[in-house]
Image 1 (spheres, rainbow, N blue to C red):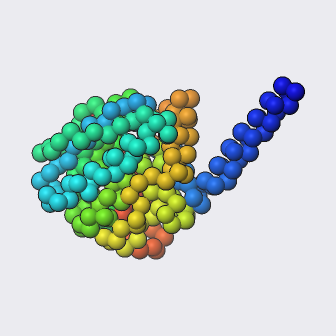
Image 2: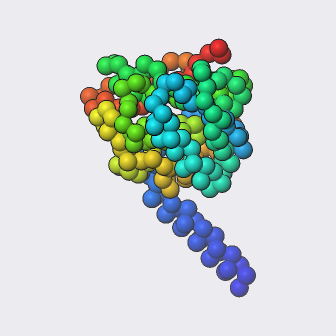
Image 3: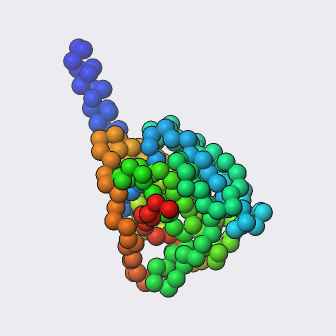
Length: 233
């Protein structure tokens, strides 16, 4: 009787895992993983180069921090973001994330935001990072969606241009300054971040080569590109 009960529990667990995997099929509703992650349990200090933004824009930049904090335990990352205040320039300190403006968009790269990352350990665990937003991106809701997306790259999530609309914060963006209505991680994002951190406990891969990968498939301009490695300042 006990053996039968155990088998039922195992079968139920397997069915649940299978259903979750099916529901969050990679490339359909879930992004692939394999980029940067903050070390488990990191308390990330977030700075905004305030002179780069209008006073009313800052709250829209910070809104996604709470959204990702809300799923911190569910993802297993236990990473929390805390606003540390205004900065006059990017902060290159341990466990620091700076949000700033900079020229990102051009006809070749076709994107408006970018994650610039550095690892003092030489692997894919972040020491500090910068989210750079092109001055062309001014729609408040689009700013929120763009930061939510870039924070996804902070948790190992890759872009998913093939994913169904509104299935992941890693969806492709459309025309400039049009929000994609994805200000917070989805259930499939949570599932994938959890997988990324399970992978991290087994092995932290070496940092990727310091170059950008350009994909030009003829879509409307998009607001994101692959995260890039930057040298120590």
